[in-house]
Image 1 (cartoon, helix red, strand yellow):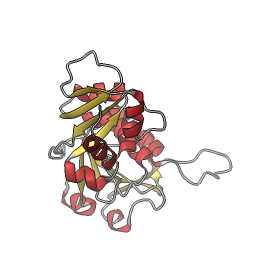
Image 2: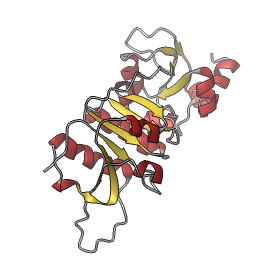
Image 3: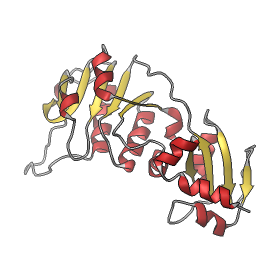
Image 4: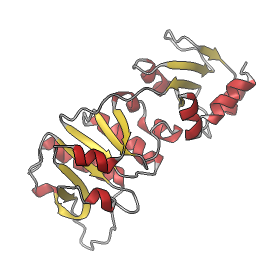
Length: 241
């Protein structure tokens, strides 16, 4: 059975301040939990309605009713695990880095983490104003990719000021990405969903790029930031023009 202390701890982990206080985050769903169990992430506890076919120390069998009490999902997915928040590794400045300037939506951040995994981006740099990557909704959207991307939260302007890499930023008024020769090593900055790249960070950008609109009416205001990230990463990996 779940103890009152276990229930209290898990429900508290929905909030960032308690994740930071305890050093834990929540993962739901058998597939994502299995991926993280095979990673370097340390397991604290695993609560499941059916036993796993792997050696998972800390596994506790619970009822579906108990799972509903601790789940953050409308429809719980058979298992919930508590993992230890890892210490981020130093940022590898060789290769392509994605930098996020105040991305607020958990779904967007989770999708971008998954895109980084897909395109072989090992390092994701987030401004301190970006949503916490261990937010349960972010974790859900990463579908396990959180374990394969090194994520650091930094003073973004200070980080960009110190780099020797070219800094590309996504802007509506930038030059078409389809006309650019893109380097293998660079930083790609993606801005806030509503306001774009901040003025402070914009001043550091060395290359403004955009994804041109091809619709006859040119009526679409902008692309979702995760969709734009996917297109730009594809172009960087292709090498551009």
